[in-house]
Length: 397
Image (cartoon, rainbow, N blue to C red; front, side, top):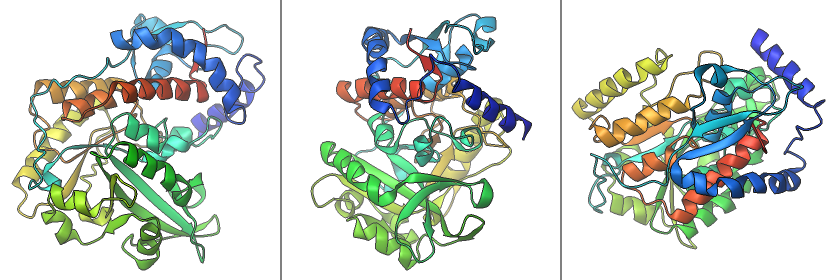
């Protein structure tokens, strides 16, 4: 709680600093400011090196992490926290280069291959990318810094979608947690759907899997009730969007890619399939509380999934589990990319779930066999730059 109190105080003080203007209500103005930094950085993107200014109360290590990279200043410089009255200093961030297919893994693309045998980059707690800069719950909830469509543009092909609805209402929101300590989005499933559908139409060869889980019915701020995502209220609203919602676990277990593409075809083009999270083995392990424990967890989980008699869709949660604060570690994502490209650690992986899609996510997707166009990659990096500014971690130099 002390950390949250300090975080809240820092946010209040940040509003008093004249050169740190928020991007929330002044989004267009802030994006215009960002354009200079973006234009200067385009050539650096191709080299995998970007330079930004650390935001107020951020270290270069934190600024680079939000940007989606790893700080390459000296250890002391990476760890030094910028004060409220000092000008931003240079942060040298190593970010992913334009992705190339360079991996020991081969993506199965035959239509008769099973959905559960194909790899997807899945973003953890995907909708937390909607969280605002001044939301004090970001430390305890935020796993992503960019929104759902932006995550897809960066290479995600599966989204972790957690839904909440008010009792006797049909408008569905996204959430993290429940009750008093919960975060609930201003954005709605119905409001975001047209953007998701447009992305699918623009990428007609891609299949996106929405894993629907943690469904909750809210009766005021204090009383929340868990609900099976396969209940009629959820199925009805999801199908109203024109989206297939598969809740039969046996059907999913035996579903081929060809069948998935057929079921997921949207009326105006593109492919997006919603599945009940109860049909997906999440492989959650609360003991993975440090980066050093992630690789042994992946080895153990992949071994268990290969040996499992009754096969199903499955996640491999390749991130540090939250204790109180959400640990965002871009260096871990860099290591995951290395494991994909230099070993067979993830051979046969289904839903490879990560935090911080901005951090090497496009390269991971490419290494798993997906095509990330040059346009999508540039858009991804630009979106991650803007997100870094929106969250106050990066400033224009």
